[in-house]
Length: 130
Image 1 (cartoon, helix red, strand yellow):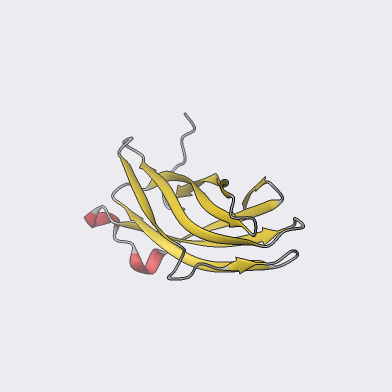
Image 2: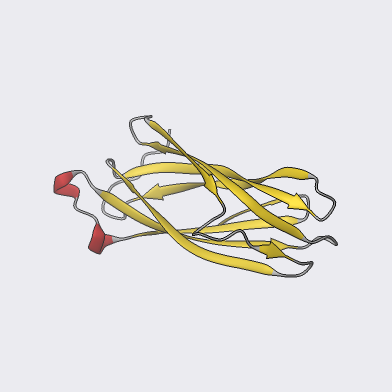
């Protein structure tokens, strides 16, 4: 699990390799990632947008930007959390994802919160640290 807190909002990510959707012979590797966003602050916030940077093992970068997450723009009151699952394919057996969520406070202030960098690794490949 990977976790990071920005302005009292904690984002925790658990990546899961999907063997049944992957096909290494076709250079297709697929992961799901479970995300939990917890508002540990005193103010209500809303998630407006997401920005992901996905890098495969060959250093190729793909950026994904969009409104909300999984079709929602959740509002988190103090002490509330929101969980969702999404996924990503890669043409390599490993990679890394990192990103930000754009949040809006009750006051109208818009600010970014960090999504921790997390590793995507096939359990069938030897992991090499660089």
